[in-house]
Length: 354
Image (cartoon, helix red, strand yellow):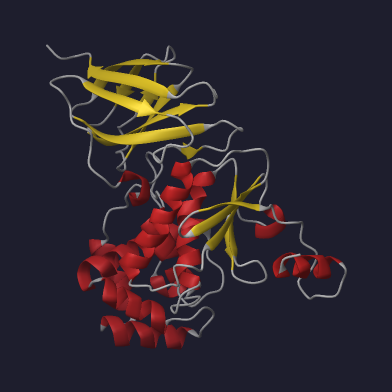
């Protein structure tokens, strides 16, 4: 029996101080930087491990973290995270489990939680809660405001040096991290992370701001109100070049075999899997879509930017066209849960070209 599972058993027998936890899924697939267990009958695709490995390396590289590459991060995809994460949808636990938990119905949370996992398990440690969520939000989240709405922007002195942070303040934290990196550079951000500790008195947080940023919390808060960088879509899934157009037509030959390194799991069912590519849509309007393959597949468009209040993206009910409210970069996601589907050809073109 592994030492971790022995601890879980001991806790359930009342001989350890953690409280009884349900058994962890078996770790069944190992990447270069992560090792993954899935609750349920799901085949892990090569692209899932590859994408999560790359994200770990990206976070380490951006923040100058030097973790032991052989110390792989444990990730569990479970039906319901409540037994481990309590009242939040997904979590990284740095205690008895030292693992990341994400729900099968929302696996996109992995990008946020892996940032926590990398940072907390490094020499930077468990930093101030507000700054910690800012790091995870900046490097692994989509914080585009809902159409016609805005995220609240309270003064920073009401947010730093606190053990709790409301979800609606996460975007404010991500903006602070983006601003520090843009104005002062990532080494300055890392210095602030190193200085601030979770649960420290506000006076200590104030000292860190003055020492690292050369201004107190209130001055930084006022400046952030004036020059806050715009919120952005998730950089993790939107990085990379766009597939070029051939005249007015864009085409893609997609592979959907689970063993292909471009194919990742969707976790909605045993065979749910997907692949994606970036494309630049030159104009708003209707786009026709043709999809052909050796099995069933669907496509989705996801913007790589925050749409304005007048923008919109609607999937036509017949599945053969898209209405795009704003031009820009998108992810075209090809998805299937048909085990027979291995290859799909997609073509797309604007219907209003004269």
